[in-house]
Amino acid sequence: MTERGSLIVLSGFSGVGKGTVLRLMMSRYDHYAYSVSATTRQPRAGEVDGRDYFFKSTEAFESMIERGELLEYARYVDHYYGTPRAYVRQQMESGRDVILEIEVQGALNIRRMVPDAVLIYMLPPDAATLAGRLRGRGTETDDVVRGRLKAAAGEARHIGDYDYVIVNDDAEQCAARLNGLIEAQRLRTARNLPFIKEIQEGLEREARDN
Amino acid sequence: MTERGSLIVLSGFSGVGKGTVLRLMMSRYDHYAYSVSATTRQPRAGEVDGRDYFFKSTEAFESMIERGELLEYARYVDHYYGTPRAYVRQQMESGRDVILEIEVQGALNIRRMVPDAVLIYMLPPDAATLAGRLRGRGTETDDVVRGRLKAAAGEARHIGDYDYVIVNDDAEQCAARLNGLIEAQRLRTARNLPFIKEIQEGLEREARDN
Image (cartoon, rainbow over all chains, first blue to last red; front, side, top):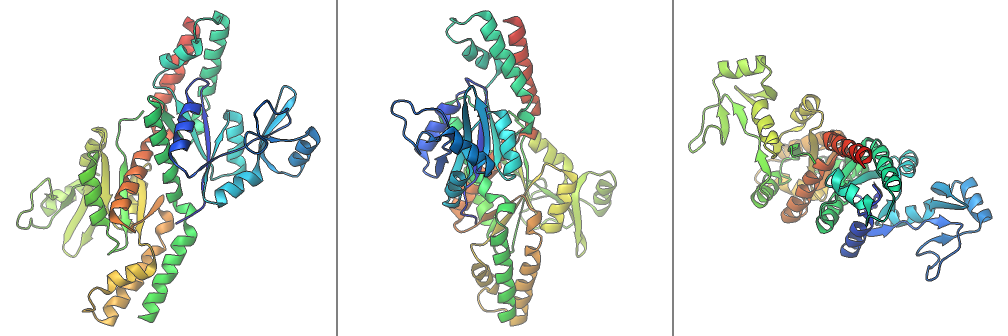
C-alpha cells in the first residue's frame, strides 16, 4: 500500500470551529503535518520562522512565484501569503498527511495544481447555529452581522466543488470522523497502482514457477 | 447529513479472507445489511428463505429479470443467482450500508446500474501469501494450483476499475479499516446536496431577517 501521505485541503465557514477540530485531531494522531505558509509580513512576538511561517522578503517571495515554487498564493492588504510546494511535497513523501486550511478560492486553485488533493468542507449542524456564532456577543451592528451572514450564504454556493463535507456538531467526534476520512484516502485505487502491479506480477511469476 | 446507507461492493481473490473480515465487521458494527441473493437452486438443510437466499422458481426468477427487479444476475451451471433491487434499496433507505460480496463482472455491472455504489477490492499483503493459500494443503495437482494462480493473475487486471483497495494483513485490523472506509462514504458531497442547500437557504433567511 502507498506510504505517501495525502494533501488535505480543509475549508469551512468562519466561526464553524475548524481550528479547534484541527488542533484536537493533530494532537491525537501523529501522522499529520500542518502546512506552513510563506509570507512577506513581519514576524510577530513569539513567531518562529519555519514553524509559524516562512518569513520572506517581497523580492524573495516574488521570485518563488516566478519559479513556480508556490502551490497557491494571494495578496492581502500589503502582504503576500502562499503555500510552498517543496515543504508540502517533502512532508507527503515522508508519509505525513498534510493539512492545508485555506479559503474557497485557494482550495480550488490547489485542486488545479494537485489533482489528487482531497477537498473537505466543514459545516455547522444547521444554519441557526452558525448564525448565532456570527452574531457574536451582540456587540456588532446589525449591518456587520448581516454582511457576515450574506458572505457565508455566498460561500455556501461553492461547497458542491468539494469532495466531502463534515459536520462539526461536537469537536471530539468531528475530529475522529475527519481522521477516519483522511486515513481512508490512502486506500484509493489510483494511489496504489504500483502495489497492485506488484501483486499481479507476483501471481504470474508464481503460476510460471509452480 | 445523509441518513441513507451506501451500497458497498466487495470483491477479492479467492482465498484472500473476505468472509472472515466481513463476519468480524458485521458482528462489531450494527449499521450493516448483507445483501440476500435470489436463486433458483433448492434450499439446503438449515437454509432459511429471506435470510440465506430468496428461493425462487425459474419462472419467478425470469419474470424478475424481465421486470428489471434485479441489480445483476448470472447463471451458474443450471441455476440463476441475482441481487434483488427492492431489498437493497429498502435496506439503504432504512439507513443501513448494504454489502454485496460479488465477483468482478457482477461488480462492474452494479457500477453501471448504481453509479454511486462503492467498489472495494481486497488484496493479500503480497503475492506469495495468496499463492500459499491457493496451494492449499499440498493435496492438489500442480495443474490445479497453476490454474488457480493464473486465474488470480487474470483477475488482478480488473482491480484498477475499483474505487478502493484494502489489504488483509490482519483480519481484525482489516475489518476496522474497512468499516472506517465505508463510514467515510456518507461524507461525499454529492450525497449531501439537500443538506448543503438547507444550510445555504437557512443562512440567506438569517441574513434577510437580521
